[in-house]
Amino acid sequence: MIRTIYFGGGCFWCVESVYLKLKGVVEVKPGYMGGSLVNPTYEEVCEGNTNHVEVAKVIFNKTIKLNHLLKVFFSIHDPTTLDRQGSDVGTQYRSAIFCETSDRKEIIDFIKSMEKSELFKDNIVTEVNEIVEFYEAEEYHHNYFKNNPD
Image 1 (cartoon, rainbow, N blue to C red):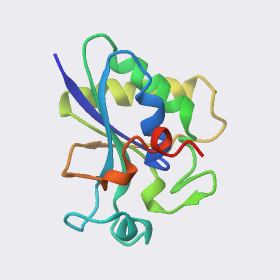
Image 2 (tube, helix red, strand yellow):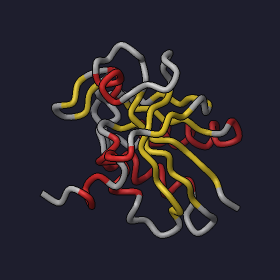
Image 3 (cartoon, rainbow, N blue to C red):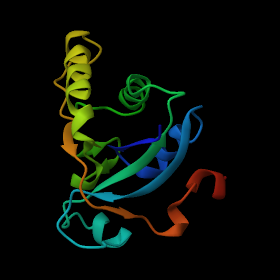
Image 4 (tube, rainbow, N blue to C red):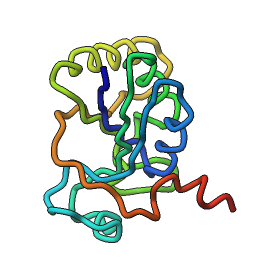
């Protein structure tokens, strides 16, 4: 069975590069979700006026569990900063997950367990949203770190 989830945790280049390395992840595509503009460009999203999130579309199989994908997600970004990851600031860098309705409860329960674990001193602000229209990023963003080793 093949499943899909979308992770927004700052710049999509960083999120994509991590998930590409995981066994059970079939494909990862950078793109944009959650905004108001149809078919936005990278430049439009970066301006911060479209309300899109930079996301990585993660397609995975039964070799890897959703729980493991979530553990990775919460270890590669700071889910407690609103509209920011490191020096990347803006709504396009907010912490967000877009998922199937059937996965929503598992994800919310996972986040609640993370809050109780005291791994983060501040509250988790990660949005959990149902899947909306995904706009694939321009080709030069795909597999960015492999294609731009410098």
